[in-house]
Length: 196
Image 1 (tube, helix red, strand yellow):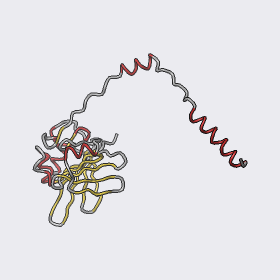
Image 2 (cartoon, helix red, strand yellow; image 1 turned 120 degrees about the horizontal axis):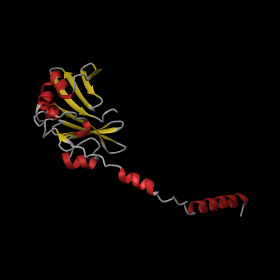
Image 3 (spheres, one colour; image 1 turned 90 degrees about the horizontal axis):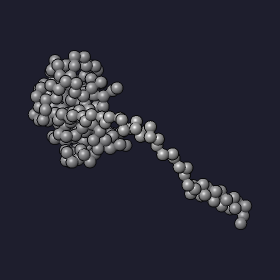
Image 4 (tube, one colour; image 1 turned 90 degrees about the vertical axis):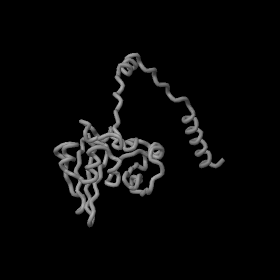
């Protein structure tokens, strides 16, 4: 054997032996750590309110984490969305997300590409007939006093574009978007994860 080949073979053999050797055993969990885990109380189940079945504007303390749209909620996987809403009418690929339209473009679902989980839900004016209670009126007419009465008196107001106004409740993960175009207006409820 040539010296380079012999050196390579030696290094390969050492690496192979190290990789195949038995991993160090971890000690068994102590009785103290096992009892600590047992004493932890499980988290209370979250109640979900479907805006196509209930008037979410009347539920005190509601956040985006307990609102669903036809069963779809933040954190759901793509397969869950497909089962609940069927095939999308349209899907667009954004930098980090896929955004799909359902129900005559009244529902948009934003799914993160890396995790395959829902990170945003949009319900707009096209869905107002299916929304229950005051939310239906809010989506149809965009009354600001109704928005404040439903979700809180002090939303953060911004104008991301000239024709768009956004009212946000960051701690609730609820946003309301008004878009003015020519002779029409569109109102959208957007659900995102709340900011801690």
